[in-house]
Image (cartoon, rainbow over all chains, first blue to last red; front, side, top):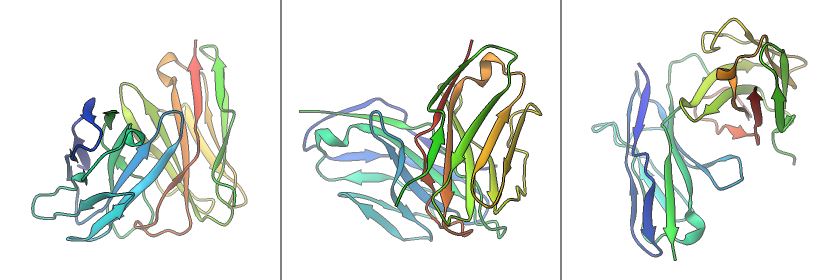
Length: 115
Length: 115
């Protein structure tokens, strides 16, 4: 079946530290991969995405590369800020050929950045 | 332009009552999705609409749940005879097209509490 596995945290880092949040998935075929972020008191918003193998998604200093061989889509940022404190969700949607479909989400990783 | 809106933002109801949750997608968006976010289950996909049609209703948790979309726009999610386990945040999202690579834009959610 389809699933997404990510570290749940909380992950606590100091400002300017390097961030990695691991995400692995199981899916039929080659899905599109997404990272969504939920800031405190706000709704889910797309952070970045990659739609085919070896694609790199990037936004706001965050990056993730679609690794088909390891079925992974790890999120990285070189220097985190306090404002990056949020819950991060890895997600995928399968390329089933049937058009639109729902996202399968991981459990979410709560990131806390301390000044 | 306006984003996805949902109403009400909060709903408190008594066990056994019926509730209706409303979603207004971004104008012109073709597909609409419903999700549920709860502490125990994380983010679960419930159902999606291509236009006014829902190709697959198997994600709905039970036959107490139903959803419809009219005029290719507004959607309502109805829960009959609510139970305490229905307490969650119900999220709606929409996409401009039907490609699985399209970004899903989320609304702020409706927090449902069943007493």
